[in-house]
Each structure stands twice: as structure tokens, then as C-alpha cells.
Image (cartoon, rainbow, N blue to C red):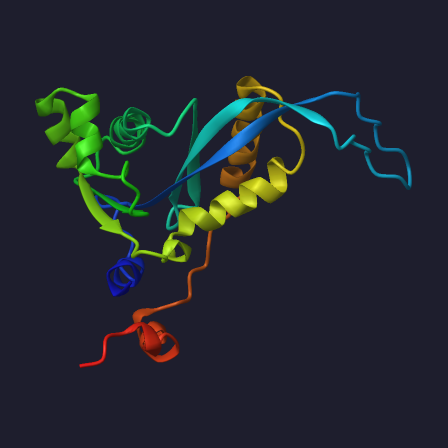
Length: 206
């Protein structure tokens, strides 16, 4: 826990950008009956019945010190999908960084091994060398600022039915563009000192 909190206290460094990564899946749903549009004084009405239309995975890459985020929409949450997002992060978003300081949950797919499963060894090592990885502890996903951004995305853009992957991509892209344009970010206040006081029970007794 202190490792991640200490990372959050570092000053911004363009050569070592801080990026928080998290993921979630979303059910795609088709309406079985047309919804009734909103009218003055009445909200939009949506029937409770729906038809499942598959699942997509959302990878949230959030740079809090830059007030920027990028979301990858994939068909699944496999190791190769994670690896593809890392390659995009390194080569497209931060090609000139010395290293990317990457905070993420300790999922089995969130590992250097995923890069070696997806790419040739030389390419996997090139990408791995660009990462300074910090995992949140078990049951400590609340320490990942990308999880907060996923919550905002869910409330602001995904609160009703999304029928197809294409619609999901369009919604996410519009939300992402608006939030980036507004320079919206997370004002993280919880520090290592706070943890030692408020979460003392989680520390080992010596």
C-alpha cells in the first residue's frame, strides 16, 4: 500500500509519466421493446426486458497528473488484449518517455508474462523495459485511481443499454474526449502518513 501511495506523491516528470490502469467488462444488451423518449416533465422510459448481446472489456489508462485518459475496448480480457494495450500505451501515447510508472491491480493478466505471450521475446523485453510497475495490494483496488475513472465513466456514459461493441466504442470515445477537454482529474489526498494513522490495523504487529 505504501509503495503505491509514495508513487502518488512524486512530482510530475514528463520523462516518467504516471499512468493508472484498470479494467472492467460490460454486458451488451438489446432492447426487446422500443424505449419511450423523454418528454417535458417525464424521463425516458426503458422496458426492463432485454436480450444479451455479448460482453466487451474496457481497459482504462488514466494519467492523473496530466488529466488525460484513454480507454481501449476489446472483445475479451485475455493476456494478449492487455499486452496490446501496453504496446499502445508505450508506442502511441508515450513514445518519448524513458519509463512509464504504471500502477495497476494484481490480476493474473497484469504481468510482464502477458507481453511474452503476445509478442516475440525481443519485443516483449523492449516493452517491459519501458515500464516501472507498481501493483496495488490484495483487496486494495481502491488505491488505483483508474478504478475511480471507471466509476465516472459508468455513471456518465454507460448507465443505460449499450447494444453493440461499435456503440460502446463511440460512447466511450465521446466521454473520453469531453473529459480530456475539460482537464478533469482525480485530486488524490490520501497519503502514507494517513494510512499509518487511519489504517493502523492493517499493519503487522512486531
